[in-house]
Image (cartoon, rainbow over all chains, first blue to last red; front, side, top):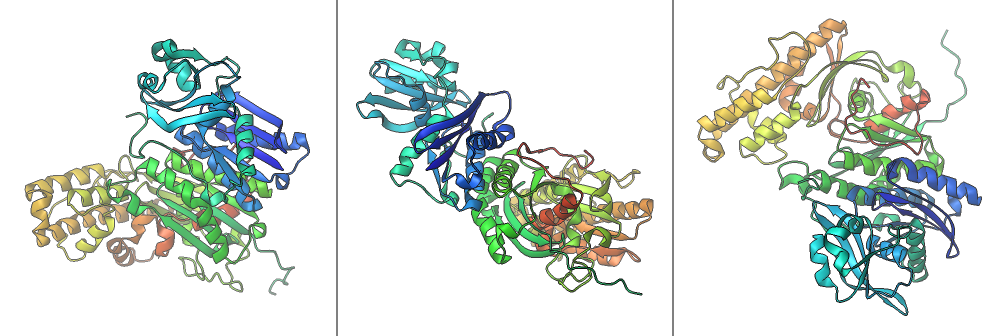
Length: 224
Length: 367
């Protein structure tokens, strides 16, 4: 089973190809060029390198937010547009969850806290706890001011994501450390791997049903 | 001797996608002119309570509607994606977040199906919309499969002056061919449709209020209020509607505000009629100037404001000797049929785009 996944919910992102649950290729960059300009071309490159055609992809996946509105819609529009004409299903996964699994390397911490920059002085995120079965989310995903995040924690945390990079020094460092530099951002390969887990659990949906998760009212202007 | 019939050409069918503002639209058009389907999912109810289009609400709705709208367009055209010669999408101008959903989706569909992708200018497509229809175009030419207008889109079009008037645009252009457009004048501030919506709001008529102003104007006295005819005294083909809107606001205040106006039907109708008369005078006078300066005798009036009854009636009466074409209502408002139609000419000229295509929210027609 071949799965192609896009991660576009923050300034870093790209695309990954997973074959039978194993990462077969990944293209990933931070900033520089918009996801819109490069993601589809990079996906073409991955498939070509693997010797696949578009028809060989069984499932298309993307992170669904909460994250940058525009970025999330790039990813979801792409998988809708790829899956619909080919009659293939899609899977979407939480952006904070993908970030949490991307950054965690088994460190002995009480919490793993992915934080995406939500602008206007806020972060999107969630609190995860490492267990024998992996990372388990505690409570709901949130949109909060970064100084409000520590009240959700009762032990040392590992912070990751653009929100953590931006606010760790100012608000978060007494409560835990920043993820390693090579693991501080969400990887498309992790989105693909999480999506594959959903597929195994029967979680595919038709492309028309893929929805973004925003956590913020549509009438709030990001630069207000 | 009539030309000998050549081998039958395969019809060129294009799936068009439009998402530049608050309508998610898809359509299938054959040979650039014959509309096989034209599906529009309007978001007007979503925006009405805010008194205007909220870009983020619009972008979210496009993402939810785009697949069902495209499915419906193909179903109504009794066609499959593999029957399409290309995919077309509005690249701009428009709201960035809204355009993005259509462009990303269209790029992906075209890539997955290995179809050529054509990026279309929204206003240029409005200018072209007089050339499309289900059985006839707006000039009255037959578009049935056996008619004369179906198989030779490059040569059927005679030059014309086009006035594109909507909530987002007010442009005058000389259209010498589908891809040969000379912009003659544009608005310097508000679009005329925007002015209609704003005065409707000032008069307490809700949003969108252009149709309400038009309806009330039909029963009013257009001479009661002396509203200005902006830019008419100046040479040139530019427009300006913000001063007219301000003059309207002053009259509303003199009459006691929107609450007082709500109880004075006569004054409300007269004010709407006076505003409409000012807009119509300016639009027709500028169009006449454009016709004179270009030497053309055909005028196309396109865009959402072309639905306006007062304007349509005045066009029929006040431009003797000029052939005037106004699209059917479904092609006046934002639609994807005009996108797919114009795309046929881009495709014939080999003007296609790749997966790097991005949106161009401020795309000028001259660039």
